[in-house]
Image (cartoon, rainbow over all chains, first blue to last red; front, side, top):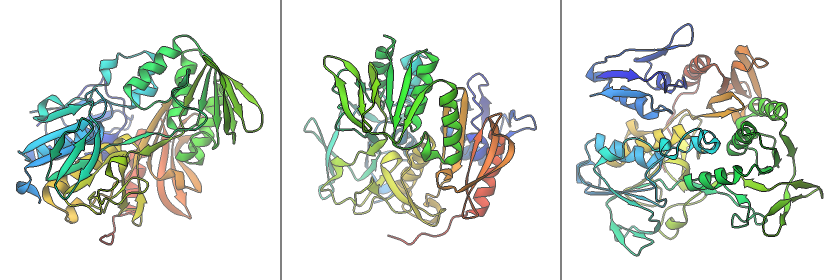
Length: 62
Length: 399
């Protein structure tokens, strides 16, 4: 699964970091870092993160 | 009936919780008939911008549409209100006289603004803010640059005060409780400071006794005999769950629709509930009964309710979230997790309150119950992990 965060839309709420810490994290500067590709076993986590993003900034493909 | 046996699912409510429930049903393999009923004419949209960007005219109306509706393979009955549920016949009655058969149903009818007898929203210049249409009407009224009085100082009241000040309008708040009291003492203190810094007069502990006006609003009379002059009044004193259509159905009602720990509605079969309307025992906070009106709960409970409906209840379907909210106002973002409104003590873990960049742990009787932050999401995430450890899920007695 490919993961993409639209940085123009992301508002750093951090819900993805809470929901899917395996994929998303804040670095030392408080910037969002994430894996841009994850295996099938993390699909559910990625979907949960996308659906709980308050700004809808996370896109998954496929 | 669960899982493969379900043929017809009706989701009552076409907002965030209903949409996320419908999505989860499809994503988890439900292939039967899916119908979503919504009492507003609009497809699902996002409410948080209504008090902020949309009201300020910074975004267009279509920017609040929620994605995902078109891919759903569902029938959308919009502008239709559910009027009654007949569980014996497995039918939902609508306001156009139609009946929808169901064998699985999701209650997601949300909440509606509470009203004051003195301030009927039908009066000229009196508004409430819940729907997109409410927000459009208020935005139009604000364009005439009125003096604004806001009754209530919760999330909506304080956020609209912020938007009005951004638009350069005079605003006064009349409120029984201190600003943002529901979010705990620390948020309340900072919010009070923000309002003062932005020249919003706040009359705390005051009640409205009369609307003043004739063909238009002239102001409000308060219980101490004083008056507030205003051309526009927003009533923002909270919301009440929409459950009238469930009366007589057998569902247990009272402060919303009562559910078990798996979002199953008590008193009915094959019916689950999610979002503002649902009250349930949270296995994480000593089984504390909760009804949560926040955005993230609508998403998480919509998903959880759909799972229970499809798979039946098991230890994997216990809905035991750590609630969270955010509020953007006067350039500050409050974020919380857990139950900071219950706290008797806050401890700053990172940053400073003076700079409005901090993360604070919230304690009640020495026990961590939540956290509040401003501009420190990373600190909040850390405190959330700690709360998840210190406040684990424990079994709730079956209802």
